[in-house]
Length: 294
Image (cartoon, rainbow, N blue to C red; front, side, top):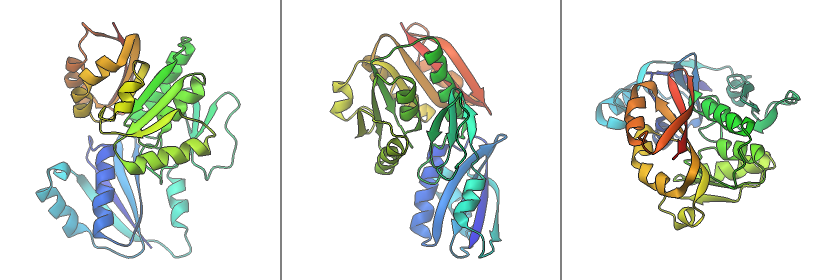
């Protein structure tokens, strides 16, 4: 068993990690798992292989030929893992439970119950990107908690680009009477969301495969009291018109996945003439914004 750790440059995003997983899976049959971590502003990928893969030449080539990965990593290291170690246990050790807002986020390998004052939220990092450990997801969970504390009572919520489903499931736990729709353009994320909803004994209203708002069922269920979008800055900007048309007057929009260096770009699209910023969380130079639609 071999463990490859790729130390990424700041700004490398979770969606890119998903793309890299697809590329490595196609290239190496021995890839068992890939997990994304970002503690102390040091993003990295942990890959586990059944055999040594000597990826140095492949990674260098990938950086030079594919613009998506042109600024991929700082360094990497490969080590032989003793056969008596459980590769899944290694991932679990790197993914301890933690608090985010009103939630206690943990993997299914954790047996210790959540603290009494927190809402348990079980999400496995090995299933899909969006385990909750990234600063963007933490910020969203904290802003959802803020809305709950302000006695927000939504009837309809959309989580677009749901990933693992963590935010849609969290919203349902905070607002049990609301209809919650989760969508993503990746079938693997749709599957992971269904699995996580079942694991958390949470019934979402619908889980929809859609590129942006292209699936007519998303517009059919509009307007929404709250739209959650934890995705890439460029996609947030591109979707502004669709989000504006799908949100209720005086509704709320939760935007995340925004590196600090691109905050101005996103805020220019969500202009103060239409949206008022009422909440902001920053984790490790990642920004989550809560906007109120005028």
